[in-house]
Image 1 (spheres, rainbow, N blue to C red):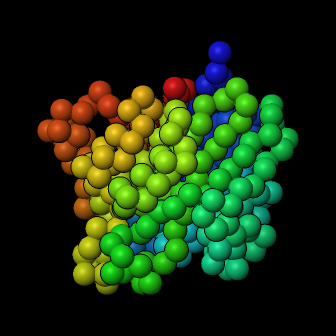
Image 2 (image 1 turned 90 degrees about the vertical axis):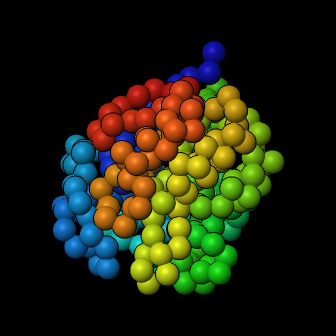
Length: 252
């Protein structure tokens, strides 16, 4: 029988994933509400950095935007042994391992070694690729454990399709949504909305789908309530496992 991974939604894009005896954290954001760089945080984390405790691996989709790595999140990296991110992020973030698409990192130390693969992602339409910067997703694999896909700030259904071609057996898909927009980038959609999230989820019809990146930030044009309504309008409510902020659940 396949073991179950445990997922806790901290807030924004920050999810604690307890997997194969290791503790993974996506895009650490722990600042209090208020201005953060060029963005505005509307609510603090549902679980504090102290309450989260020890982290073995940070899965950092990118380091350039404060809603994916804020001041407190950056400070916590000093306590983390493995920081996996984009090639450019690997040059900027101390001790981080920059990974090109399809690069793999083997993380020992848990119940069994975990293979983390960096997978394609695109932060907005191709026309703003240079301005939005590099972004990566991740796939986690371990013997006897579900295969987990973490989209990162990906807005491209086609990029997710490439991941599905390589990893058709994804069991859990953590999909960043929120339809983030920025006036500096002509309000183009930089992360998936509900429609695209469901299209991405359709690449793995049997997977448990866990939305993230739908809370806490003012530049999300489709935050939680709007995301939930759009999923309901599409008749796909049963397709997603919606975690409340601070909630912990096992999957699949």
